[in-house]
Image (cartoon, rainbow over all chains, first blue to last red; front, side, top):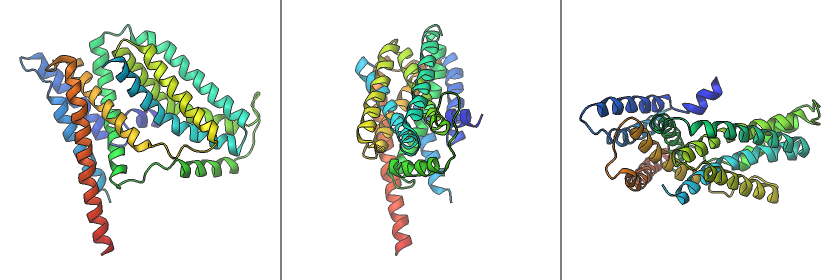
Length: 59
Length: 250
């Protein structure tokens, strides 16, 4: 179990959760008239920046 | 992505993991028993080969949109983790991956363990150390090769790239009989992280129903944009690390 968690989720579970949430939002937005291609690139910028910020601030 | 891009992405990802697996096998062989270490490596490669043989054809039956959603999401998670680690190392916030140090650590642990003969294997410790090392490092490679290959409808080319990387790295390891500490592992990890992040973003969004402007050509913009963003973050974090070190020493 620990191996699979480490394999799939890795060092920062917030990144995995953020990706899942982003895909869900993209799916919901795409069902309407919105072309939601831009959601995931924006999410990548936010998630990577946020995760790195947390990592370097950790005591 | 053309065949060349697929080959390079899978080759690099596989080479990074193969360097790490080679260090473990070398430690097991040097400190314990080469026959058992080789048998462990061969067994793990057989399991990984079996996984490819079973999962490869099965993946080709999964609807492309569903496959891209799941695979894109997983690739994106992997890619962001690889990028995060590579940026932290390049900016000095995390120690660089040191194959020589890992080799020495594995060597010391292997020398301290007791010898135990099981089945036809003369040294069970060397066998299991090599088996686990190769299997665990190889699983991610199998996933990357299968997902890139199935999305591009060319699993054989992806498998060829993965095999070529294993042969090149393992051959170099056997030739020098030492950890491959001069391989620019962090740079390779950064490049693979960029590729996984860009392709994961593209396939994930497409699988979720979004339509990219320019269709597949969007990848030509995504890859350099992710790389540029990664380099900017590395630069920003490097200067903050230098400032921090300066304030500590002054």
